[in-house]
Length: 256
Image 1: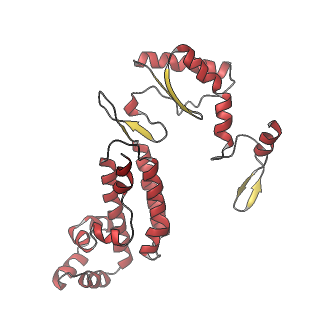
Image 2: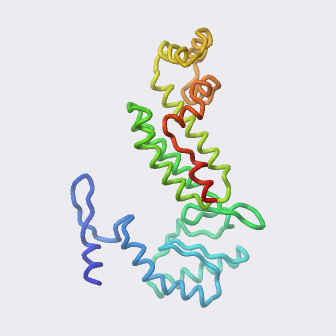
Image 3: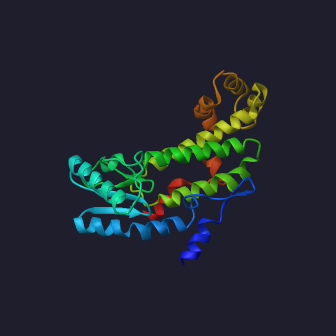
């Protein structure tokens, strides 16, 4: 078993088609990292149980719940001494914190500010999702829109929604769904480029000619137009549904 682990660690990594030797650490995202974490941090679990703490740990990510900030700071200092002294591990100072449950995140989730808290998607997770969508849209500007939705956008939306289906608040899913529509309208408006093209496209979608030209010549940017009434009328939510865009809410709510 030790020989297999060593071979795994020394196998190297491939970047840009070239294999590079690894000198430290485990491969990012591989199955070995959480396995080794569980083996090494089993002593931490037993220590926390011995002290009577309530905690959640997944691989090297751990939350410990206490009643006050003073208790949190005391536990943080004592566990740092335990990890560095007994287990010879280095604590990441930039990631450790003492905070209220709704101010921190665990595996992408956070909690609401209620006496009986509910799970919600952490703000950082929402921002990462938006950034991934922005990157996809930048890559898909010249592609067929329906194919882009089916092959690139839907897998991301489906995977993200399935991961966060345990969330108990749905407002963020409604907000993100509306944001996705606006990003797609923005992509369409940018594709039209010229004022003449925009006016003709709007006319083809049923606008009166005078109104189409007025909307096409408004002088505002793509993001403003994507949220304006004319683009909402030209491409309502149902239009994206016909293009195949899956619903965040329909993916999440059946599991509620």
